[in-house]
Image (cartoon, rainbow, N blue to C red; front, side, top):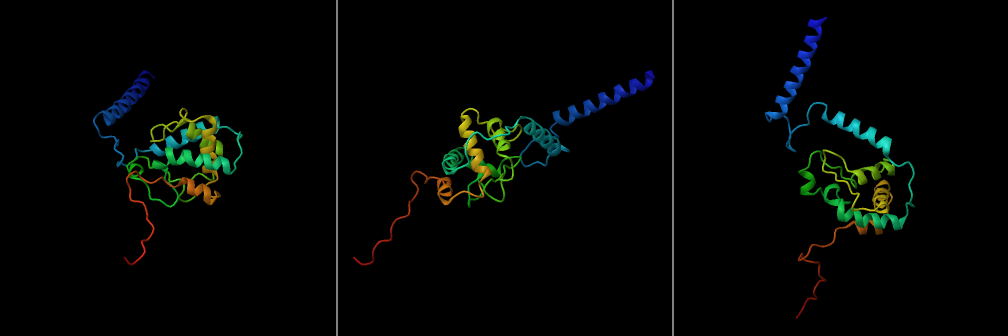
Length: 184
């Protein structure tokens, strides 16, 4: 029995040493262009979804209406679009360089199939080991709900809300001008 326990202890120590060497010698994938580690996605997603399911709010305290979507659009455009994109626009260079890649929330179904409370949890808390920061603070509770409801209803927003999502013109950028009359 003593030899058996010693063998188990040796095996555990050997696995620990192997893991230490894997990470300390620079073999582990840490660059954004590297492939994920074995089981990395599965374990991270399982933990994330279990935590969200446990802690996300089950009720929405504000109405999902045009006023909410407009306020959410302003917040989203100014704080989220650089990573998660805007309707009809390509992914930004910042988003292309991230690992894992941030979902483009206005391309495809985005998070429209998620419960608003799930998106709210992500906005408030961020997601560890990704580029997703926590927005509590600077967002108030109402602002986090505005963004979450906008995204939950992204496939149903009005043209006015889509217009609000357009980026403002860059300072010094050429603005379209009216055609000049021909002649003199």
